[in-house]
Length: 128
Image (cartoon, rainbow, N blue to C red):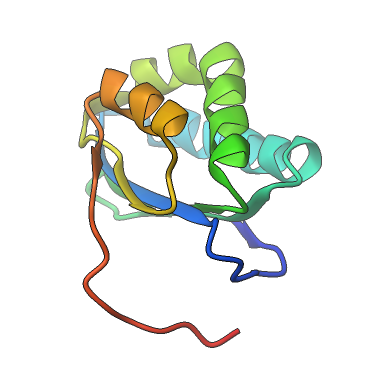
């Protein structure tokens, strides 16, 4: 994963998802993650954070943070074009995206089409 300079403009969007890998797909998924992180780092200037965590039993959690809804939509577009097919072959089950932050209507329409949901902010802080 990676983290760029994190900004706090009030326009940021974050999401997380949980996934379960298909048996014997850990190596393929690991390679896929390396490629996804590399692509996000090199092509997506609006991606602030992209982290993937996995347990030995195939449980995966992803955290992603974007400068804006436009940056998140760009990320989804790249994912759909370049990685979705391989993701689907590696993943047995996946939770819907849980979106936080200033997601606009266009982003939420794209996320809702995938079954994702918005989580309203209840409170918190960030050290920036």
